[in-house]
Length: 346
Image 1 (tube, rainbow, N blue to C red):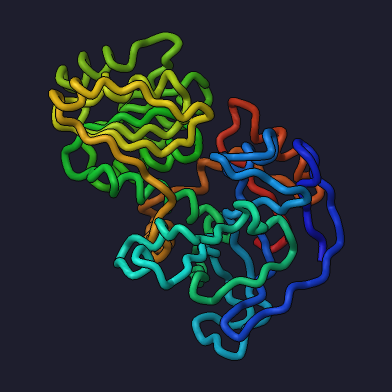
Image 2 (image 1 turned 30 degrees about the horizontal axis):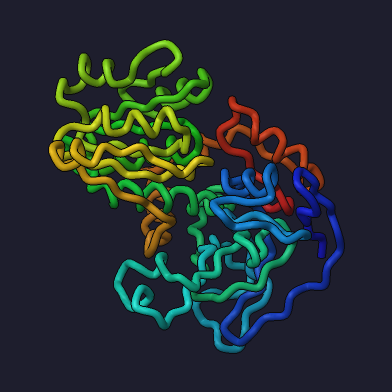
């Protein structure tokens, strides 16, 4: 099979590998679509992400969907020719986090596709446990199935923020996660959603997808926009989806007393200047949002019913042979989401 290896910083090499063999509880999946995630770009451009360092060669890609070609003897969940979305995290199944109803994503021994040393989906075939595969309805494309992963990130972030009917929400960052976080917030009943960015194309996309105010922070102060047009006290929930320092600093200025700030985007500089006295006096909640748990069925159902439109965040699709050019393009500011077409299935 063909595999696209990251062989150095900013260097992919297409190589031949043997097909993986499957265990009794595993499935062999022919990979069809792989989304390019921000973490993939960090690994590609810097050789590390969030403290995880690549040992070359390495295979990236964790937003994946494909077609089942073989199942292990103990598998009944899916069968040959089923189209499936792949949940990329494999928790240990034994720790206290795995024992909780919705906390397995916090497993400290999690093996996450494309996060070193676990290899990813930019390859023609992947062996994966059937427990973490989800059959796609006929009306959901493989590309949409691959995007169930970033949609799940957005769903978990909004759950962490407790976004509900009538809430006012600020989303900082108009990349793929910010676009999907905004959509999920609206689907959960948010009354007003403000999204900030510096790229006109991303702001225009957010407006076309239904946000109430798309604010270019190079031209307008988002806090002033909120106080003038939304609520002079601030918003109920801030969902920081960019990882940029200026946006991070805006979060506590924009949230109202007793509100909630959720950090989703991974910053290059992890420090967060916090006034503890202010945090006490304002009594806002500062939360992190890391990956997701038990979201895939609802994500796929939401795509099937039209509640979530993941396809419209895709700004380009590239062939497997053009993976390096696709990663370079995905790093351009005006691009929102790139997808690699590993095979020619629909």
